[in-house]
Length: 249
Image (cartoon, rainbow, N blue to C red; front, side, top):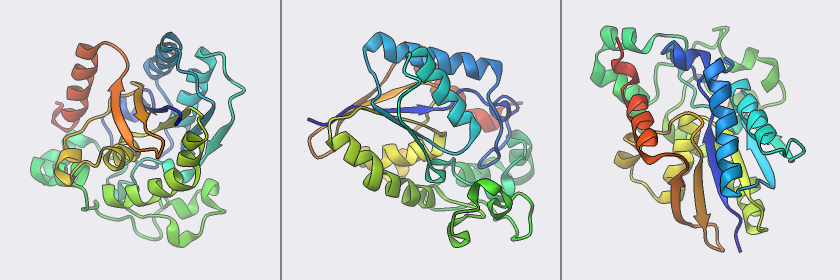
């Protein structure tokens, strides 16, 4: 019998609050984000959903979310694997820009393409841009050819799929419950794969911060169904807030 898969986007980050494109920039959680992460752990506890193994990106907002969840579950000893392949989609030259101002400068349609299309990447960082991940010591052991200067959701899915096939799926096949703490787009990519979403469907799928998604899987790790934990109306409102980020004034 397959284990359960639990996906959690990190709690509110400082740049979520400030409405900036974040990507691989390593911002921390706000106080609200920390509270959200603790509450996410409590939701799992109330459901009796205990992870046997956990995965996170190498960005502190995801790592701290995972720590706070495991603390709330009294499972700080859970084995954890961190990998850059679960990082947020790389937003290229948009990283650090205000989303609303970017809409005003480039138009809502263009920004929606950059934010939500499946196979169109934002403008790339220059190779000598200090924001390029090749200058970040946490990626020193990664082949520079694998480090992106920008990414589409399709690109993000390609690297997330490697984690799924080599690490996550085997754990689920062994009957272990797996918790993944990651990001809006790396998790959207995973949901697209699991649910067989079309490119159009995934454009409109929004994942709120620190709201666990639980998957039931068959013996071959195919999705039988997914559900958000928490109050349905609150989840729907949070999804709408994510959709409207670039419209905020």
